[in-house]
Image 1: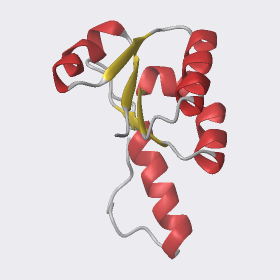
Image 2: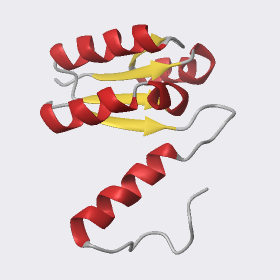
Image 3: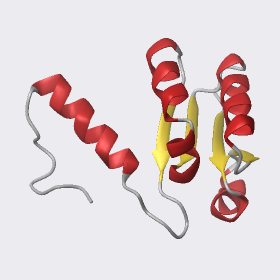
Length: 108
């Protein structure tokens, strides 16, 4: 059975414990990179990363998305939304089909 993990600040991720997701609370860039590398090596199938952490380790996420089995998905924080996940989705769709079919206006 494949495993699911979540990396982010404790306040945002604590509620996901009820779903059986492995939680990895952190707010530090270096620690987040180490955790992400460890999860990829342990063959987690899905890794969720909160936006605040994803902004800090974006290059590592992009690199691992190209080379690993894991699906790394960015989710919003509890309080602040930066729409990083939507911007990445939009870019990937534009790259794949050549046009923006999901969004009619700019993502803030």
